[in-house]
Length: 245
Image 1 (cartoon, rainbow, N blue to C red):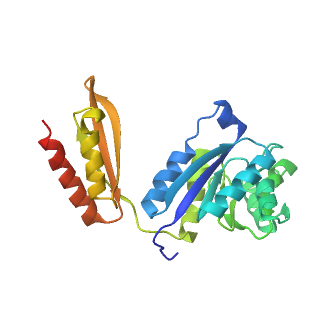
Image 2: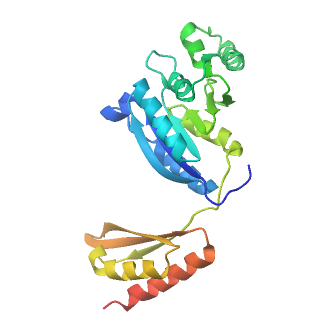
């Protein structure tokens, strides 16, 4: 897909098991790293329960605000897998068994000597107008409707769906990163960092404290789409930090 200057995204994590703490969300981090690599800026991550009205409301808000919305979870074979229905409702379209999705599932289960049961066929229910996203692990496809990309909640399956849909996405300039490790607490470098940010308003800067051999230290992270500006800002900041008494 062609590149744009800035392409943004949100992740909508769907599932009671995430909110209860029973399942830890690994997908958001995977998606964030991947989007950064391809030039899409992740702006928001939201988690909602398996409640249709809440999923619909979240989709309505996020898809109007960002270039893309990536959802994870809720497209399996059980009664509480309601993401596809919620997406259909959010777009005001019908939903039913997709012949293409059903054929994919049938081939997958036939190849393993298993029956395509009603529960398994439920995973072929796709909103009208959506395009399928390949799932080379377990057959059941994800789908893309408008700017919403619907993927599985199982991390390995989500990852292959994310890979499969990537060629369809518009991307922007990649955000580059420079990291400086400083053996000082952030309170000692806050003023220097603030002044430096004013000198380079086009370079995002953040300070992240940690302990190094039991003593406070700071990691300074600079981000920019311009390699020259990033290099200049990082070199100047290192000089300013080194000058501190």
